[in-house]
Amino acid sequence: MLFSTLTKYDGVADRRLDESETHQISGRAGRYGMHEEGFAGVLAEAEPTAQRVLKELLSRTPQAPANFKAPVAPNGWHIDTISSRLAKTKLREVLGVFVEQLKLDDAHFQVAELEQMLELAEQLDASAGTLTLKERFIYAQAPVDTRTEGQLQAFLDWSSSHAHTGRAGRPWFLDQVDGQSRLERMEMALRACTLWLWLDLRFEKVYGHVEAVVALRAALNDGIERQLKGKRPLAQQRRQGRGGRG
Image (tube, rainbow, N blue to C red; front, side, top):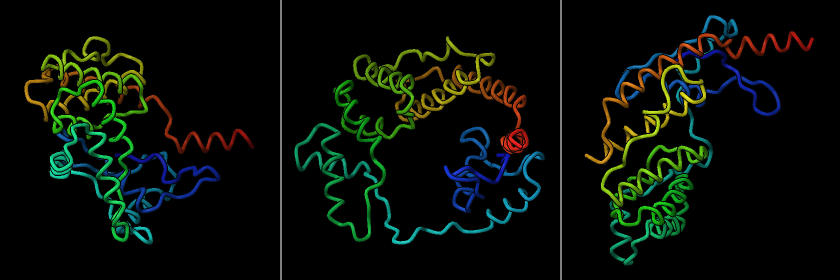
């Protein structure tokens, strides 16, 4: 993970990243299943103090905000217990009960950010309702980008096909994208590859095509890296932009 700058625009002005933000970004170094160890550094084009600032921030322990409450998310036991005791079979209803019950003990805990899980649960109940409650709960935890309509629809299609045929089918990206495609298209496909492999790990013999997906993921990583090498670092763009305004 290489930083092009240790500053960010917060909507008002440029400011330095804090330790929590630096740890969060640096945590993306490496890649699960490919590079188990990651390294963080700065580009030569970054501001002169960037390397020193990065080292300083990474050595600090991020502090919890004031009045911190531990976020709690549901697990399989919660889902099974609520479903069996209240005779509920809709995942959205079960999750709703969990949210309401946890709100009763708000002195020490808070409900984790479950908006996406709740949204996916409602859609899965509608399009893949014949899957077991446990299977729908696994799907609702998938790393799908619900802000990207294409990825969300593909995800729902896969889960629906799983529910009706026992197989997810062939993923669109194997036939429509390669390492020579447009950058935005490759990035979209790379996220879809990650999602597909996540699902394949959890639903044996439902997804498959693993070798082809892994090979495409490698080609996409190479293609993205090749295109990004031709782009100027963010810090350099900012400095040149300010110079142009002067």
